[in-house]
Length: 288
Ligand SMILES: Cc1ncc(COP(=O)(O)O)c(C=O)c1O
Image 1 (tube, rainbow, N blue to C red):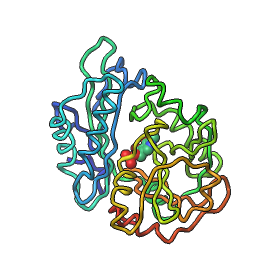
Image 2 (image 1 turned 60 degrees about the horizontal axis):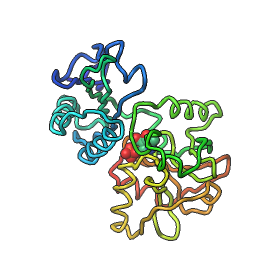
Image 3 (image 1 turned 90 degrees about the vertical axis):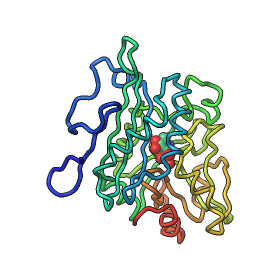
């Protein structure tokens, strides 16, 4: 059951092999390498109408992340069962975010730690979806091709090492902005700390190529681009300089829980509004 504090669900916690536990239950040992080293992986899945959106695609990416980190991932069926346990008491009318987390476990080489949490989609995400967002570019410090040539940089893996991602967002917040667009040291737009970049130009939806840049291959963006034809739009991947986004017909950040948030200023320069934002968001199935 969802733990409640006043009206509405708050947070569900489920542990592999145990099912749902009271939300304040301690889950990690003090020597868990996920906590000590950020050594683990996760997925965030959108919960809508009481269902998990694109769960199979998220689990497939989790397999790829686990391979990159040489982590022993439990069988997919066990992860599906865990997700379903977390979801069981969740009200169908409440939009949620399910996290599935797998860490390397205790320092003595014990089994992986596996748990899931389910929370309501936060007000910041909903506001970005509704009103758009203000964004600043920030250097990630290495060239766009660096991660594809350096497997130890874990390009494309969704690891729990998000301290840099969160620091990037705090840096934006400190300037009164909503988010950051990371840029390579050679000047190419990459991704945001928790979202991919999508833009509309020449009748096509574009995103940054994940394979050569080592950014996270987003499930939301891939779904949108694969289905763009149904909206009468083309789709493709290409590199872009942030300055060239100002001439696009729409620029968005896309991710599983946020859905689609239109970038309305980039480094202080106004963008949009795009006439396509509502249509794309609805097509992705996110409420406004
Ligand atoms: C670094 C990063 N890039 C991109 C994304 C978007 O990916 P997805 O659409 O699979 O949520 C996320 C979100 O989880 C992310 O953390």
